[in-house]
Length: 336
Image (cartoon, rainbow, N blue to C red; front, side, top):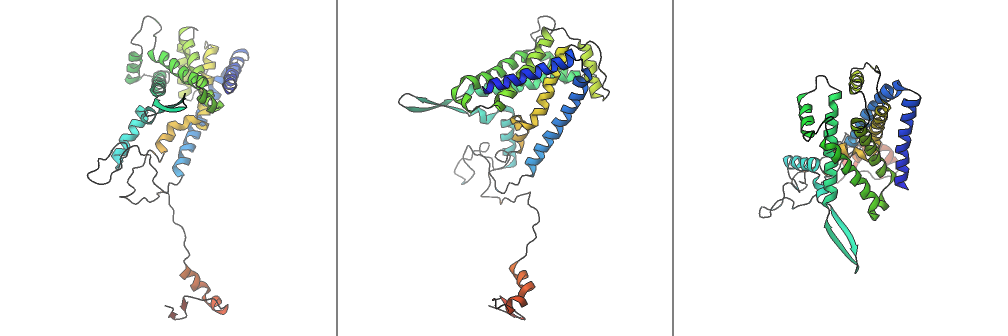
């Protein structure tokens, strides 16, 4: 049911954009107003989440460790798995961000006859996540040619390498196929595996189906439904130059694709997709494990006004003596 709810939401978004941009011809709304609003909400929401994480106090060092901590000289130290220095933290963070190292270590647990609990390697999830994220990244970089004029050279390089298997026109991109296969695998995995289906929520299915819909509409627009690419380029350049003019000849499917992208931008800061920024702010990843060598001082500490007992007694000594309360220091005489 949770997957059906998510599918219904995505389908409703498609219907809204078809009716709005197609039947009602609200091209200015779907071509300029909604994209600008979605971009602003994405930037503001993303920054607010990151700043909120950055302001959270971290009174203790809590790095995750998967190896031997630096200790005695004759014990081999795991410099990357249990970094002692900032350089070790940077290397571990790069491996985490670029290679999904923690996901690579993911294990699968099965309950078999006996009963017997077994642990085994689970590399398919790591491979699917890696394929999805990198193909998505390359697709986003390729799309930058619609927002730049002249197109930077590195974008043309990505475009040429991605379309190396060109058989005709239009160019068939490798990442389009990899992207659809990867996102389909991640969705089917949650749907088919019983324990994954049990713990999955609408918030898990919805972004997968939304991104899948974005990919399908984009591929359909490129290979199956004729669209005016020149007009789309003119629209995107107008948006970038803050001169929102809608050219003629843009098909409805483009507005559907754009509306789904805008929905993803608005949903992004509110969802689990914020792990893109959160991984850099996680104290379990960005801290060195040197608790025994370096005293950790919370950098978020601020000066706290302290009123010591000596100051308190100086302020109320006469009243305390009049009330018969013991004091540490008499007038001109200090008690021992």
